[in-house]
Image 1 (tube, helix red, strand yellow):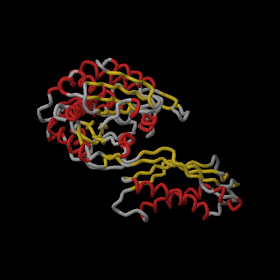
Image 2: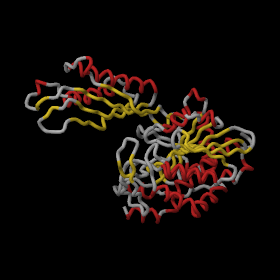
Image 3: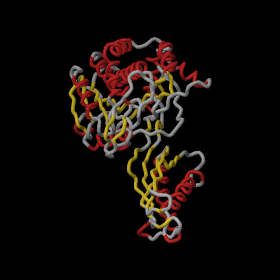
Image 4: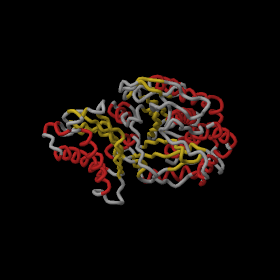
Length: 441
């Protein structure tokens, strides 16, 4: 890892956009050098788990209150923070940054690792790490707020800054909406957010004109068997055997019931049962993640999981009152950018950052985002979500030649180069707000 960070320092110039930067980018960079870099390190070293982001929220509230004209409200949807910056009449734009970390022990090799531990809402004590880059998101939000407050001659309207909890549990956005985000505060015409990604080169941005992220649902299946001695399996109902059949049968939903060009994923990430070699337990628990790119497919997969689990139970002779229990515990819809808004802001970023900095969007996996709750069709809020590069091009090139792999999200070795990610993200957000709230908007 140390070699990677030496390479990172040696290639810092690669992070800068090739085209002439907007005039406010230099001010954002200076702000990073003076204070934002230290703020980022504080966030990185003090991560907190979903819905437990008390200190992170307090620090964000403090930073936003220091912005002239900002009105800040805490404890929205749990630990969420909302800042409102008004500047005369005009539309309202919402900027969102998520702030939670993950239960992972950091081994990234950065000189400022997290050694934090915390008991999550599930009661489990675990190490905590910003293994998905949310520390860059909230730091960039502070940078954007400071810059917009200093540039009120260039825009008119209202900017709502939403510091969201629990994105990793895909619950924080929904909680904030249910707690009156769009009734207690100015309702936006537009909602914007970005995510740093290690798979995209520093200084680059990328956004879809349609689907940006897949849906994600967490499904728990409890298989209720009949316990017995392992030497006499005929005297019970083995939940491990039944659960194993469910695992295999679920893949038929993808390979035999879905159209080949309509993507879907069902992954059984956890299967727990029993405590001893020679005891057939009376229960097995499966934890499943489900992904889709449209709501119809999502509904069909969720219904299919329930159908398969219950009928496998019937096939194995379980009575109706002992069939597997299927429960959907967490979920978020697909995140889809408004087409017209995405075309407009992609053009804005191309103009402001340079054509070389704007990469065509390619959906390479089925990651999900609960930003979708802010921009559901019935809300009337138009959404724009974009990616910001987090890894120097030299590191990406070295990985392509067989060198150290690009650090993956949600892993102990995850890291991004914070300065270009924060500066690029804040510059892009500032450019988007000025375009939407500027004199010609």
